[in-house]
Amino acid sequence: MSISLVTGGAGFMGSHVAEQLLNIGHDVVVLDDLSGGFLDNVPVAAEFVQGSVVDHELLTRLFDKYRFDYVYHLAAYAAEGLSHFIKRFNYQNNLIASVNLINEAVKHEVKRFVFTSSIAVYGAGQTPLTEDMIPVPEDSYGIAKLAVEQELRVSHEMFGLEYVIFRPHNVYGERQNIADRYRNVVGIFMNQILKGEPVTIFGDGTQQRAFTHVNDIAPIIAGSVDVAGARNQIFNVGADVPYTVNELAKCVSDAMGEECRIRYLDPRNEVKVAFSDHGKAQRVFGTDVKVSLEAGVRMMAEWVKQRGARESTVFENIEVFKNLPRSWAAAARVNV
Image (cartoon, rainbow, N blue to C red; front, side, top):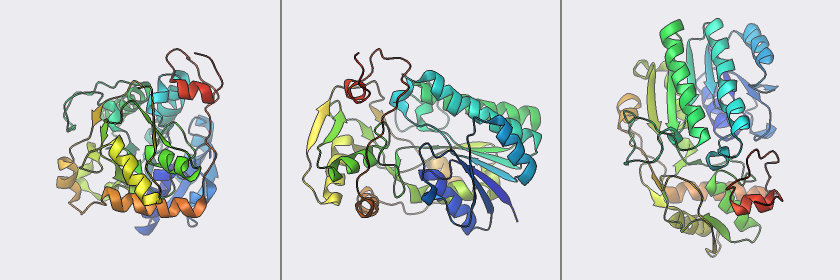
C-alpha cells in the first residue's frame, strides 16, 4: 500500500485531497500547522502531525520515519493581493518551505511530487490561459508559485524527481475558512452575509473569474500519481465558465437566502480577467460534468449556515504599508 504525505491537509483543498487518497487506498499522513486549517477537517483515517513545512528538521524526521511514496504539497498562504505587503512571509512559507519538501523528496527517492500551484503564475494577458503561455506573475504569491514549479523542473532534470503540477483557480466549497478576509471570495461573502453585513467588492465588480468547486479538482489531484500521461506535466484545472464578481455576489446572496447588498471599495492591484483553458487536463484525465456555480454555491451555503459566522482574522505582521488597501489597513489599525 502506498503512503502519502499531504501538507496543508487540515486546510480546505488539502483535506479534500487527503480524503480522496484514503478512498483510493493510500495511507495518509497529514502535516499542518493549523494556522489556516482546522483539526476537524482532517479525515479520521489519516494520521495527523502538527507542524510547519518551514521546519526542515521536522520534515527530515517525518521522511525518515514514514518513507513516503508520494508527496502532495498543498500547504500555502494563498493571499495573492496581500502577498505584495508580506513578501518575506510569502517567500518563507510558499517558496522556502516548498524547497524544504523538495530536498527531502529527492533525498528519500519519493516516487512523485504533486504540487498545487496557481493561475497567479500567469499574470495579466489574453484569456483563456493555457499552459504553454509564458508566465509573468504580477504578485509575490504568483512569483513564489512559479519559482517552485521551476525548482521541480530542475530537480527532475538533476535528480530524476518526478512531479505533477496543478494550477487550480478560485476554488471554493465545504471546509473553506470563511474567516479569512484576504482570500476565498465566496467564503468572505458568506461570512459577511451571516453577520448581516453587505458584501464588499474591490473596484466595480466587473472582474471576471471562473469559480471552481473543490469536488471538480480534488479527485484529479489525488489520482494523478496513477496516470502515466501526467508525469512531469503542468495542468490547469477548474471551472470553465467565467462570471463577474458582481454576478458571484448575487449568486451567493441567493444561496444564503438574503437580498444582495454590495459595498464597493477602492480598486486594488489585481488581474482584471483570469480564467483558464482545461483542454490538456481533459485529454489526460478525461472529461467529467463539472459542478455549476449555482449548485456548488448552494452546497457550500448549506454547510456554512450549519456552522455559523466566524470572526474574521487580521494578518498582524504587515511588512510594507505603502498602498495597502484602506479596508485592510483599517482592520490592522494602521495609517497609510
